[in-house]
Image (cartoon, rainbow, N blue to C red; front, top):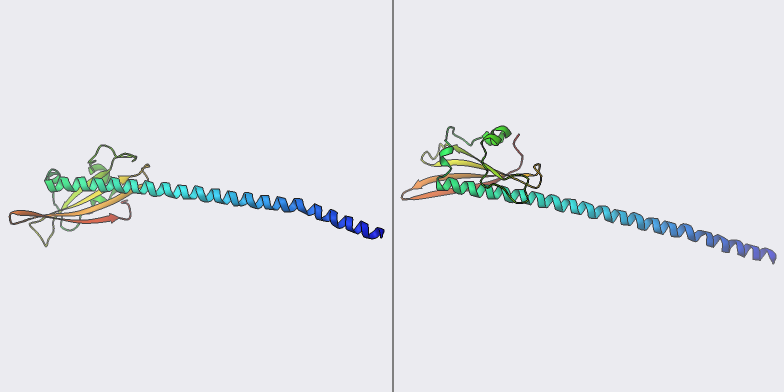
Length: 178
């Protein structure tokens, strides 16, 4: 009978010794889960900030494109751009020529690192010799200068009898100029 009491005491003691490692394991799992949720929340915040920054640059470029296109349509910017080549202009693709010749239609854009810019290039359309064609390229910035959006408007102004017809062909530039 004595041996059976000792055996019960050993099993009871063995059960009491298991509780601490189980509790430590559960606490460790809770800490790992909390850390994973914290990392997920940080990643979500960074992604939201990046989307906000991109939207900021897109709206700045869009505003610059609209302002420069209106100025061309009204005739206030047309004198600066002279059509020298046929075919679509390519000077906007070179970063140095864009920086030299771009104008800022507004002094500043709230939330942007720099004011938005636009660059106007005239071109001749062989199929429509009486039309004046312009390629308007706009660049908008986000909070940092690295976040940029590039938009373009192919603007064609043609006299049609007593009226003037204006065509806009908008496009988003995917790759930055080099």
